[in-house]
Length: 221
Ligand code: MN
Image (cartoon, rainbow, N blue to C red; front, side, top):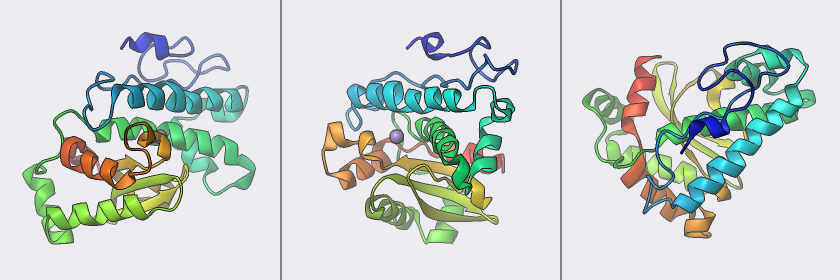
């Protein structure tokens, strides 16, 4: 995929270089090809999810913040400064969805799943009693969430935890550090799995979850 076609504004690929009403939050490039997550998640799902839903959040966010002080914030600052403020709910929803999706694409990879790197595995063992127990807890969080939302592995006060968030919510405002996320909005799986969310979650955990990304986030904590 040509990342340039998805970049808005004048700052080019990557972090914003300049800040003005004409610069914009950008849709980060997918870290892999649209078909990289097959056969669990189809290229069609990724194309719709990334190219329509994810892009839609970024585009709407840019419309909402244009000409306001919010346009000069980083995406994370924007999420934190609008969280829990009903007057800013539309900005929060689109900013958080933009942040969550960028994080989600990196939480998956081709040839993922398997056993986490040793340092993370040791923490999983001591916190959850083993990898299978963590997968059980993360899977339960993902499948029992009512409606749309996200299931996360986070670092909370130095301890690993599984948390659910509804709609656009994310753990940043609770000052926990996200390590991994699974998107359980229907748009993440309905084309491939129809109503079988549990099969999508199981496939993602067994074949796609990017433990290396969790380790990167852990070590930047
Ligand atoms: Mn999504």
